[in-house]
Amino acid sequence: MQESFTEETFEKKNFTTDSFIKGEYENCIFKNCDFSNSDLSEVIFIECEFIECNLSLATLTKTAFRDIKFNGCKMLGLHFEHCNSFGLSFGFEKCTLNHTSFYQVKLKKTHFKETQLQEVDFTQCDLTSSLFDNCDLRDAKFENTIIEKADLRSSFNYSIDPESNYIKKARFSLHQVYGLLAKYDIDIEE
Image (cartoon, rainbow, N blue to C red; front, side, top):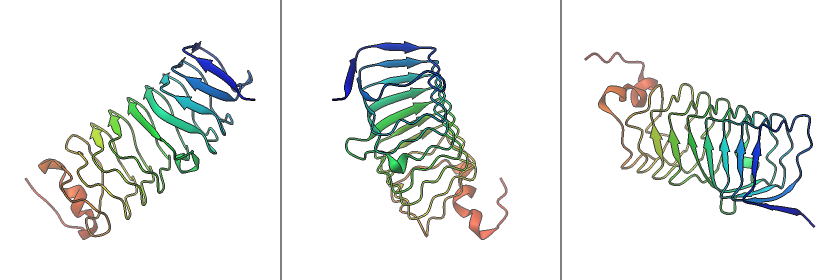
């Protein structure tokens, strides 16, 4: 039987040395915790908040993230495509998600706010109606990605090929439009 934790706060825990108890965490807060390289496989997180935590290179095999908030977290090299897809939903604010993969993940209506998404793999991802608010998308990979109705107006450094992605009704700013034309190797002047 899995252990269950409800409305608990875990602060300044180093799960790289202390053992992390696998189980179900509901309405819990993790603050300044280090999960880097930890095995979070099959853990269930429901309506939890991670504040200034390090989850870099954590193993996420069948991990459930349901209505999760990540705020100020370092999350390098994660593979969200290995997560339990049932009810998968989260939001990111002021996080660093560089080198992370969302390959084939359904992320409809996901909010990314002031987040670094450099070299993130969004291949075949569904980002319908998602918000990218002031995010750095340098070298992020978009291929056969559904970006319909997504808002990227305040984000920058993206390169999205309209011919190999679904971008109907997506919103972009005029000063970042070159990110849609990068493959043509043309000069755009103001």
